[in-house]
Length: 290
Image 1: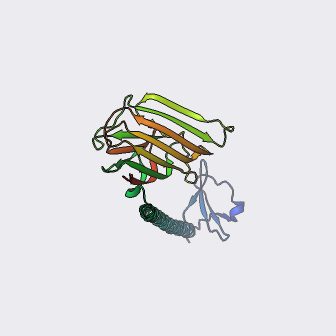
Image 2: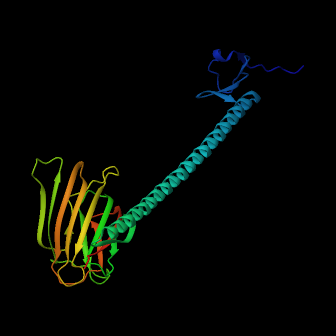
Image 3: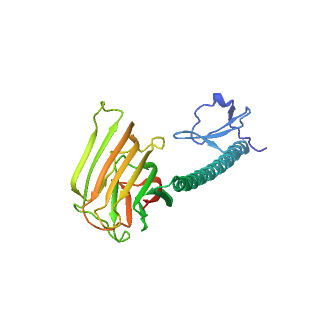
């Protein structure tokens, strides 16, 4: 009769430290098998442990699949949000265009009323929306005694002043150096009554129309600018009246300026002292009655 080789057996919780080469089998539900070695017990894989490991792998694969599905859903949500943002921007652009069209209609009506009332007539010339641009270059056509530029919803990228330059060659070059003389005053709600912030120059490379403007979309500024002597018979003269915000304070701006050169002007440039800006402008020509 063959010899029967028996190994130690018992519950998993009671397994002892086996001698090197000695087997130990767990007779409980775990059915785990161990062999002793110098550093302690080493488990030997059985079908039960292989099945348990396979189950954990299946669970991990399922978790990975769930994560990938969630990531796909999140990407879909991001794409939907980007589409919605693009649609919203389109709606804003459409609204700004509609505002410009409405302003043009108002201007046409004002021109008609002026013609009916007699005297000088105001003629609509051009209108544009400037979005996040470093400057707004506006062509001045010939044939008018004066010009009026209405600038609305000025929003700079940086809290700096609005400036103006003039050109007599269609914007190829701009007058600079010490050609401009001006005085500009700003009053705002943080100042005491009858006081103001002022800046003057007897010779500057640009005209400063305002103090530092607010960058907030809810605190935009507006300007009405009148131009005289642009035909070249006299030195060009400018008067600007503004209202809106200097920082977080309600403000008004007043500027009187001249170009100290006897020349005809056919282009003007609006720009911030630094950075880009957004605004809407409308240009009118004024013909005085004979």
